[in-house]
Image (tube, rainbow, N blue to C red; front, side, top):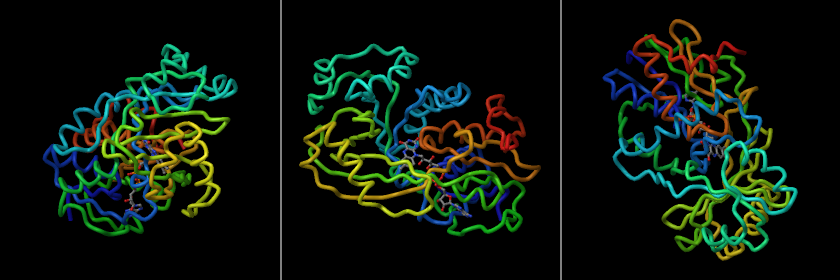
Amino acid sequence: MSDIVVVGGGIVGLSIAWRLVSRGADVTVLDGGDEGAAWPVAAGMLAPGGESEHEDPALIRLMERSADRWPDFAAELGVGVGYDDAGTLSLAMTADDLAGRARVWTRQALPLLRPSELRELEPALSVRVRAGVFSSRERQVDPRKVVSALRERLGARIVPKRVTAVSDVDARTVVVAAGCGTAALTGLPVRPVKGQVLRLRGEPGLVRHVLDAAVDGREVYVVPRADGEVVVGATQEERTDLTVTAGGVHELLRAALDLVPALAECELTETTAGHRPGTPDNAPLLGRLDDRVVVAAGHFRNGILLAPVTADLIAELVLTGEADPMLADFSPGRF
Ligand SMILES: Cc1cc2nc3c(=O)[nH]c(=O)nc-3n(C[C@H](O)[C@H](O)[C@H](O)COP(=O)(O)OP(=O)(O)OC[C@H]3O[C@@H](n4cnc5c(N)ncnc54)[C@H](O)[C@@H]3O)c2cc1C
């Protein structure tokens, strides 16, 4: 067995393993498979601005540091992972939608754009869109391409195996990065928060930016990839099943088509559901559980964004025993 075993081969576990290997460590990843994992479903928005005015300042700092790391992280992977810096339009359809978003926009200090300015940036937007802001800092990456690149880098170090107890793992250090599976392995409060997502396919360039909108009281995002794929998400449900429901699909399509009517012509290619690994305070659990076990889990809605900084911080902790001061706010011991 390896010196270090990472339990969980999702985007967080693979990123940590890759960082450890690139620093010369002997690492094995034990992974239970893609069923129920969050990364294959995730849209890949890299949104460090915080999605609500209630976001914790320490979490926003962590997200900003990771957003800054993404260009190098993507470049180091050495293959195209869909890192796209076209930016995000945050949009409001009605006066009530605008009132709901105004505080976040004020905190971000972004200038309010008029409908005509918005449609200049994004010609396919509905004429009903009332206001919005443009954030060049909010970008995107394709999580499926990232995981595929990480798998290629790690090769035979990834072993298919669902671990049932950390005590069964024969290694000097065990890093538990098992997403929602972390609760059963550690007793920490990581719970599944279901999200349904649609994938459409249309003309490349129909939508030019990530769109993150409030549409008649409904939240929806539209994430266009360079090849014409458009990801539409996401429901947020306190449920443990992975059923794609008629109601979920209807809600997402209605909001997306109200926002960009031309999406109606796209092919609906995929409907999926996954579980975000949620925690009681919506912040990840990063740090030492005991002398042998380190945890990196509970990344909730931001695990794609947070993968690079998580990998850096956990690799440093495992290899040197030194905890970056940034980890203090995310200690698993806070619960
Ligand atoms: C609908 C939806 C949309 C999202 N959109 C975004 C977004 O736009 N931007 C963003 O930053 N984040 C987004 N996320 C969140 C992001 O996907 C997660 O935070 C991230 O995937 C967490 O990574 P992870 O590796 O910890 O967990 P996962 O991706 O869930 O992977 C966990 C892995 O651990 C393995 N595992 C579990 N238990 C065991 C065990 N006992 N033994 C061995 N292996 C085990 C599983 O097989 C799996 O491979 C979204 C999530 C969802 C569901």
